[in-house]
Length: 497
Image 1: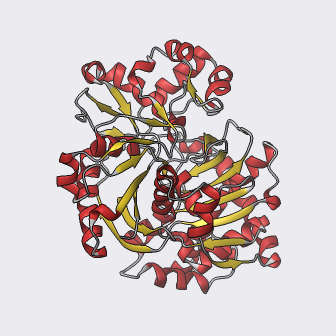
Image 2 (image 1 turned 90 degrees about the horizontal axis):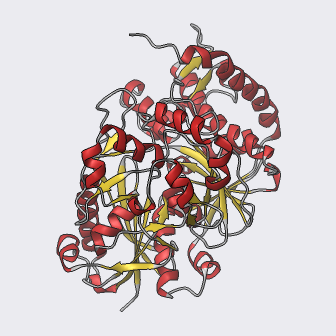
Image 3 (image 1 turned 30 degrees about the vertical axis):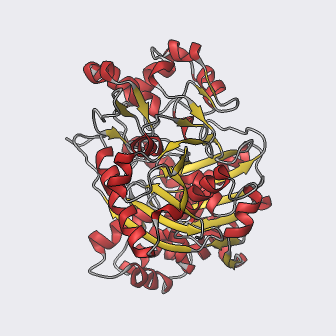
């Protein structure tokens, strides 16, 4: 029987499941949505139990669609959204909803700890600023605001490690995703017990660390019954969704770069040396001995989803982007700031707001759609410009687009025109689940190494070159975009009761 791999992606709006052949062909896939909860201002939560229920449904559905024997699946990899803080007891029971990456409830805690310990000391170990979106301030929030939950917590898990635990019974942390914990040294991939104690935390509250392609355990009898998987199927640790997507886009060499256009946006620059910047995100790659300098933004495909829902009047995504094509680059002076839930890198402002600028009676919905697409790209370009401060030459990078935005030729062309770089587009819809599956394939020895895994599975579907006239136009638009934020950032912090 043909050997197959299963990839799981715990995204923000849904989980995706896909079954792959060794050559990377998708035999079947399933998407299962789940809710996001907003119980208080700045609180953004999800229920990990709903992730697991969706995973069980998605795996069953995928196996049925593929018409395969579940024993053909020889390995399972898991990608997950970043910066969860899932409190589980010793039996693996989830004790409370997890704050997700958009959650900013620990803003005051982050500021207090940074002032107490010092931003430089934290950054030296973590390679990341101590900000409320990350895992560590959320753990401290539980300790200070829900001490009973904190005391009952055996381990705080990430999204992929929670699903790994549900499949195998083993609690794990992986070298990539663990960067959300600030007492985790992202250069050496070890815990810094001294820094943890300075923060008032203990390394006993976090799991043991695995390589992303290490087998953490095997599917239990209970999980097999819930998912239709074969009992005993190996499960690898997995990693951050953006990093798995980066691998699934074929990025496993220095200077290769993934441009993300899923629910959120961003970029991941692959380097063979640890290069960090306090305004960006720094983590080990899912591929050993490589690192990712990342920019994670709030605006991405979620911006167009919001526009479709609130202003789309029934149009599909394709119909909306077709409207945008009728407007020239620069949207005839309309500029959009895509800060729909605050903003992450590089401004790290939870108070930032979405803004349309330049509207007048002669402007139409077409202008607004085009400006929304451009604003998302400007937010990624802002991160690339900051990366230059860390020594990155943008024009030396091999840019590869993934996520839903990569399906739009117009949106990818805007990326090319704004950056001035050619953009390669691999199979975009399955990049993250493919990356997770490749981790399982390498871990199981189905592939000799990551070079073979990428070479056998990743195909470039098209390449889009920049139009330099548009590039010049966008340099001016980008200036306005940056000036708008600088002019409005003080206003953003003023609340209206």
